[in-house]
Image 1 (cartoon, rainbow, N blue to C red):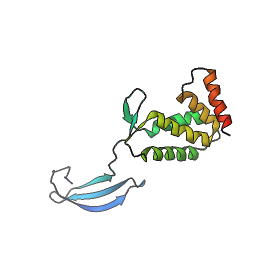
Image 2: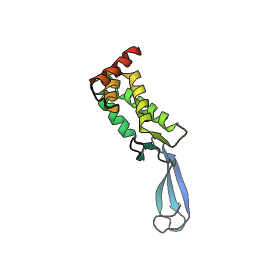
Image 3: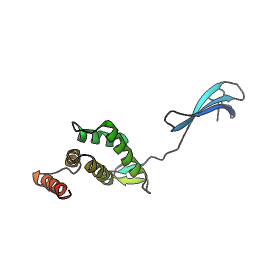
Length: 151
Protein backbone atom coordinates (compact mmCIF):
# COMPACT_ATOMS: atom_id res chain seq x y z
CA UNK A 1 0.00 0.00 0.00
CA UNK A 2 1.49 3.33 -1.07
CA UNK A 3 1.88 5.97 1.68
CA UNK A 4 -0.47 8.94 1.09
CA UNK A 5 2.14 11.33 2.57
CA UNK A 6 5.52 10.39 1.03
CA UNK A 7 4.25 7.92 -1.64
CA UNK A 8 6.66 5.23 -0.50
CA UNK A 9 5.56 1.81 -1.76
CA UNK A 10 5.84 -0.08 1.52
CA UNK A 11 3.85 0.06 4.75
CA UNK A 12 3.16 -2.29 7.60
CA UNK A 13 -0.19 -3.19 9.11
CA UNK A 14 -0.45 -2.28 12.79
CA UNK A 15 -4.06 -3.27 13.41
CA UNK A 16 -6.90 -4.95 11.45
CA UNK A 17 -10.54 -5.21 12.40
CA UNK A 18 -13.88 -5.71 10.71
CA UNK A 19 -16.14 -2.68 10.51
CA UNK A 20 -19.39 -2.72 12.47
CA UNK A 21 -21.49 -3.95 9.57
CA UNK A 22 -18.84 -6.52 8.58
CA UNK A 23 -18.77 -5.28 4.98
CA UNK A 24 -15.15 -4.18 5.10
CA UNK A 25 -11.92 -4.51 7.03
CA UNK A 26 -10.27 -1.43 8.55
CA UNK A 27 -6.48 -1.54 8.59
CA UNK A 28 -4.26 0.87 10.51
CA UNK A 29 -0.92 1.17 8.69
CA UNK A 30 2.45 2.78 9.20
CA UNK A 31 4.78 3.87 6.41
CA UNK A 32 8.18 2.13 6.64
CA UNK A 33 9.94 5.27 5.31
CA UNK A 34 8.34 8.32 6.99
CA UNK A 35 6.69 6.45 9.93
CA UNK A 36 3.39 8.33 9.46
CA UNK A 37 0.20 6.38 10.11
CA UNK A 38 -2.87 6.10 7.92
CA UNK A 39 -6.01 4.01 7.64
CA UNK A 40 -7.17 1.89 4.71
CA UNK A 41 -10.36 -0.07 4.13
CA UNK A 42 -10.57 -3.38 2.32
CA UNK A 43 -13.93 -4.10 0.70
CA UNK A 44 -15.28 -6.86 -1.48
CA UNK A 45 -15.05 -5.70 -5.08
CA UNK A 46 -18.60 -5.81 -6.40
CA UNK A 47 -19.26 -5.42 -10.07
CA UNK A 48 -22.38 -3.30 -10.32
CA UNK A 49 -25.44 -5.36 -11.07
CA UNK A 50 -27.23 -3.82 -14.05
CA UNK A 51 -30.95 -3.37 -14.66
CA UNK A 52 -32.09 -3.27 -18.29
CA UNK A 53 -34.96 -0.79 -18.57
CA UNK A 54 -37.93 -1.14 -20.94
CA UNK A 55 -36.36 1.30 -23.41
CA UNK A 56 -33.05 -0.64 -23.45
CA UNK A 57 -31.11 1.71 -21.17
CA UNK A 58 -28.98 0.14 -18.47
CA UNK A 59 -28.54 1.46 -14.96
CA UNK A 60 -26.99 0.12 -11.79
CA UNK A 61 -29.25 -1.85 -9.48
CA UNK A 62 -30.67 0.40 -6.78
CA UNK A 63 -32.03 -1.09 -3.59
CA UNK A 64 -33.32 2.39 -2.69
CA UNK A 65 -35.53 2.57 -5.79
CA UNK A 66 -37.18 -0.72 -4.87
CA UNK A 67 -37.53 0.38 -1.25
CA UNK A 68 -39.19 3.66 -2.25
CA UNK A 69 -41.72 1.88 -4.47
CA UNK A 70 -42.52 -0.66 -1.78
CA UNK A 71 -42.85 2.03 0.90
CA UNK A 72 -45.39 3.90 -1.24
CA UNK A 73 -47.36 0.71 -1.81
CA UNK A 74 -47.31 -0.15 1.90
CA UNK A 75 -48.24 3.32 3.12
CA UNK A 76 -50.90 3.25 5.86
CA UNK A 77 -50.93 -0.56 5.87
CA UNK A 78 -50.31 -2.72 8.96
CA UNK A 79 -46.80 -3.68 7.83
CA UNK A 80 -43.82 -3.15 10.11
CA UNK A 81 -40.56 -1.59 8.93
CA UNK A 82 -38.85 -4.88 9.83
CA UNK A 83 -41.16 -6.80 7.48
CA UNK A 84 -40.40 -4.35 4.68
CA UNK A 85 -36.66 -4.49 5.35
CA UNK A 86 -36.67 -8.30 5.30
CA UNK A 87 -38.67 -8.32 2.07
CA UNK A 88 -36.25 -5.87 0.41
CA UNK A 89 -33.31 -8.01 1.61
CA UNK A 90 -34.94 -11.10 0.09
CA UNK A 91 -35.64 -9.30 -3.20
CA UNK A 92 -32.05 -8.04 -3.40
CA UNK A 93 -30.74 -11.53 -2.65
CA UNK A 94 -32.97 -13.02 -5.39
CA UNK A 95 -31.81 -10.44 -7.92
CA UNK A 96 -28.11 -10.77 -7.07
CA UNK A 97 -28.24 -14.58 -7.03
CA UNK A 98 -29.08 -14.80 -10.71
CA UNK A 99 -26.26 -16.18 -12.85
CA UNK A 100 -26.30 -13.15 -15.15
CA UNK A 101 -24.94 -9.68 -14.29
CA UNK A 102 -28.04 -8.08 -15.82
CA UNK A 103 -31.75 -8.47 -15.24
CA UNK A 104 -34.68 -6.68 -16.84
CA UNK A 105 -36.75 -4.19 -14.89
CA UNK A 106 -39.77 -6.38 -15.73
CA UNK A 107 -38.18 -9.34 -13.94
CA UNK A 108 -37.42 -7.20 -10.90
CA UNK A 109 -40.98 -5.85 -10.88
CA UNK A 110 -42.40 -9.38 -10.99
CA UNK A 111 -40.21 -10.43 -8.04
CA UNK A 112 -41.39 -7.39 -6.05
CA UNK A 113 -45.04 -8.09 -6.88
CA UNK A 114 -44.69 -11.74 -5.88
CA UNK A 115 -43.27 -10.74 -2.49
CA UNK A 116 -45.88 -8.03 -1.94
CA UNK A 117 -48.68 -10.45 -2.81
CA UNK A 118 -47.46 -12.72 0.03
CA UNK A 119 -47.13 -9.80 2.44
CA UNK A 120 -50.23 -7.66 1.83
CA UNK A 121 -52.78 -7.83 -0.99
CA UNK A 122 -53.67 -4.12 -0.84
CA UNK A 123 -49.98 -3.15 -1.11
CA UNK A 124 -49.69 -5.63 -3.99
CA UNK A 125 -52.59 -4.02 -5.87
CA UNK A 126 -51.18 -0.53 -5.26
CA UNK A 127 -47.77 -1.54 -6.60
CA UNK A 128 -49.30 -3.43 -9.54
CA UNK A 129 -51.41 -0.42 -10.52
CA UNK A 130 -48.27 1.68 -10.97
CA UNK A 131 -45.99 -1.10 -12.26
CA UNK A 132 -48.43 -2.49 -14.82
CA UNK A 133 -49.67 0.98 -15.81
CA UNK A 134 -53.32 0.00 -16.07
CA UNK A 135 -54.87 1.82 -19.00
CA UNK A 136 -58.44 1.65 -17.75
CA UNK A 137 -60.71 0.23 -15.06
CA UNK A 138 -61.17 -3.05 -16.97
CA UNK A 139 -57.47 -3.92 -16.86
CA UNK A 140 -57.44 -3.02 -13.16
CA UNK A 141 -60.50 -5.19 -12.51
CA UNK A 142 -58.88 -8.04 -14.43
CA UNK A 143 -55.88 -7.93 -12.07
CA UNK A 144 -58.21 -7.91 -9.05
CA UNK A 145 -60.13 -10.85 -10.47
CA UNK A 146 -56.91 -12.84 -10.88
CA UNK A 147 -56.00 -12.02 -7.30
CA UNK A 148 -59.40 -13.25 -6.06
CA UNK A 149 -59.20 -16.44 -8.10
CA UNK A 150 -55.76 -17.18 -6.70
CA UNK A 151 -57.10 -17.55 -3.15
